[in-house]
Length: 540
Image 1 (cartoon, rainbow, N blue to C red):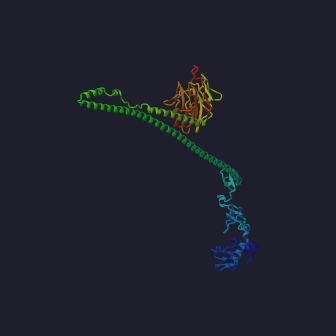
Image 2: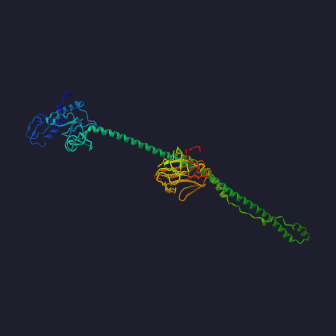
Image 3: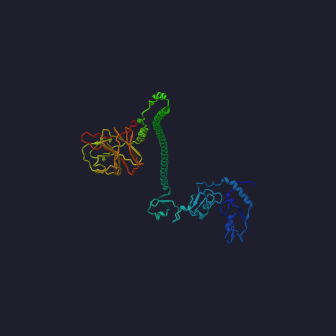
């Protein structure tokens, strides 16, 4: 049978569901219905009427499949498939009535709480009762869009309580609250959401950068560790070779002394054995002569035997064991020299590394004792001898001639250098923020001070008790290095590139300030030179 694409859909529509016939059956009066629709329609009925012509049947009709209509419906479906409304897309609202492939809904009914495609919307446009229903643009989750109290569409937003309301709500519970259309609030919230998204993305990027920074730090730490291990292997290998060398030389010295003694003993024994042999022969000759009865022979031979063979006076000869006193010590002294050379190289390399953490610090006049004079650039300080009258200040030192820097440090590592040339007394280091600055103070780590101190040619790390340190000649510049997180404070002789001392295992919980004290000027011209914060010179 040829299909006709001009057929109307109404010809093949079920009068009950208004959709294209599905499994069509016919009644005795000649009308066609979906099997499910007519069966459901008659369920529970007392009288069985045709929904179209109202023809009354005495008993429930036994409907039969209309083969002809079924074929016609199939032909129709095939011919009009391209004309059907498009199927619903993921972002669109589906028709709630479609039983097969769901089509796109064009309207939603706020009375039926149902969304309809163009075909299933037709009764709302034709039937008088349905025409009174409120139709809106297609939307999903209709129940959620309705006010539970007034059964009206939620189309406004209460800015006071930040909830969606209907028109009736603005006349009751939200009567005096500012309300705006949902679209207006949506635009405001969308803008806020965009800013939130921007902020979140920025936070994500910051954290990604932090991850990269941490990974880079770990990678740098690995490289530093590899280099440190390589340097350590090199140093310990050199030391091991030196130890082996000096051990070999020590062993060789001891063996040579033993060998010399053994040679001397061997020569003496040989000489003694030779004399014994000569004397034994002489004894045999004497014994033999003593037994002769020939007077002439006896007298002739006696003359030659009268004088014994020449021998040494062994009473003055003795063998002294070799002395090894000082041999091992001298070898260790030589090894110590090698160790000192290696230590000097290591200290120079260590100082160069810590100098990379140089910080630019300036002295804070608000903390300086009233006798102290600071340079305009805040890099120098000396005792001015006169006590200046200053306003009350909780930060100032009142007893000790001390000053802190303006800058403080609460993490990481930092390093600074101070010229102490031509001074006979000084003190420098770091101090924590909460230190006592009034009256007599014990400048020890227990009280928040980590300082190196010079007075009367004594170099001391101030502690309880003090730690006396060897004073090197021509100490002119001191470097101070702090690793806040590791609790480490180290002091260096910059000119000699030598480590002076370190304090390890400290626990820092508050900011640390570089600390300087030029000490008193004694009116005899001594100790008048200033302490000077200087820049690092890597070529020193």
